[in-house]
Each structure stands twice: as C-alpha cells, then as structure tokens.
Image (cartoon, rainbow, N blue to C red):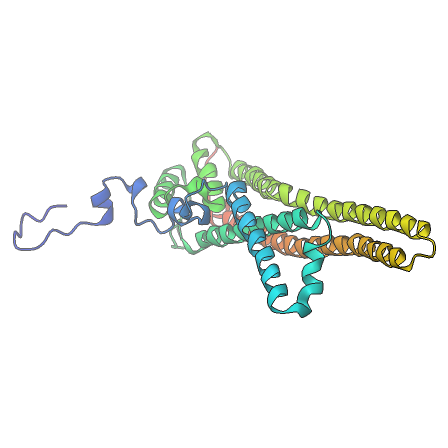
Length: 304
C-alpha cells in the first residue's frame, strides 16, 4: 500500500506487504522453521514430536562427559563420596555405555517434550470463524485453508493443522459429511502410529540398558570366581588369601552394582516414558475433539 496521497506521512507497511508473500511472512503466529527446538539449534527438525537422533546424540555425549567429570571432581573434593563414584568408575566397562544410553534416551525425551509443547500452541489459534451460524462448505473451506497458511508457516508441520488441511483439501471429492469423518479418523490413526514409532529407539535403549547390567553381572561373577580359585590355591599364605579375597569382593561389587545402575536407569526411563505417552495420548485426544467440533460438526455438504 502506498501513501502518495500524503507525502509527509511516513510509509506504513505491514509485514505481509514487506515480504510480498504471506506464505513466507516472518511474523507468523507459529513459525515451525524458526521456533521448533531442533530448528533453533540448526538441526533438521523431526516430524511432529519425533526427536532428532543427531541432536540427542550430541546432547547425550555432552551429558555423559559432564556426569563423569562431576564424579571425578566429587571424589577428589569429598572423599566420603568415593563409594558412589566407584560404582560408575571402578566397576568395569558396562556402566559407561549404560549411562550413555540413559542420557541419550533422556535427551530424546526432553526434545519430545519441547516439541509437544510447541505443537500444543496450535490450540491457541482459531482457524474457523467463531460465529455460531458459520458452516463449512467447499467455498468456505478455501478461506479456512488460506487462514491457516497466514497463521503458520506450513500447516503440515503441525499435527492439528495437518489433519484439518488434509480433510479440507479433499472436500471437492467428497459427497457426504461422513466421508470427512472417515478421512479425519484415518489421519488420526496415522498420527497415533507416527507418535508410537517415535518411541522405537527409546524402547530399544530401555531394553539394552538392563542387558548391559546383566553383562556386567556375568563379568563380575567371572572375576569373583576366578579370584576365589586363587584363594583356594593360596593355602596358608595369608597375604595371598587377603589379596585374592579383595579381588573376590571387587568382582561381586561389579556384579551387583552394574545391575543396580542398569535397573535404576531403566526404571527412571520407564516412568518418564509412561508419563510422556500419557501426555501425548491426551494431546491426540484433544486434536480429535477439535476436528470433531470445528470440522465435522460445522460441515454442510450436498451429495454429488
């Protein structure tokens, strides 16, 4: 818009006028390409609430390094904490990959949480006119789709808007309102499968962590049994018996403490995963309610 009628007034332009393209307007109410937690950090964003494996891997490496650095500093500054640090530093190789997988799973769950919080912001945007007499037809569906493109950078980056857009895009091929409900149901099932698959690698970590603990148990018991054999062969040599018994107790400590670490980590992950699954399930139910009330409930179509 130009202000030629008033040369003294400074030109006033909206962000849409400046950009020249409403689909690339930087002032979107929700901009996935700039606001998604992974995109903000310069990584390729996962679909919907699926976390990035690369970013979570980097976070896990940093967290594992920080964890063991803190343990080393703690036992140096406070010797009374050495028993705790020894569980992770002196119990063979298994605690290291156990903690790495634990932090990797935590990083993925953290990213999922942040992405879910961002997805829920879509509920705060109204794409449908709020007038009670408004009905959704083939003609008005075009306006609704255009409004979604004005509110967000791409509706297909949001579970809710993607579901609505897919249903509205097929209105010209639909003869009955029941067909729209069927499309929404199919897309809802697809979204559920998408979110369920995003837990696949986390579930794999939750299975692998206890296995690492059991491997540590076997290694510790093997060490203890081997040392006990040396104790029997020591005869009456008290020095040799004491040394071998020390190795026996060290092996038993490795056996039990590696399993303890793995089971505690797996338990913590299971609790967090159960909570996240319940939250995401509620989110999908809320999406179903919005689609049912604002799309299927306002639809008026005539048979072709």
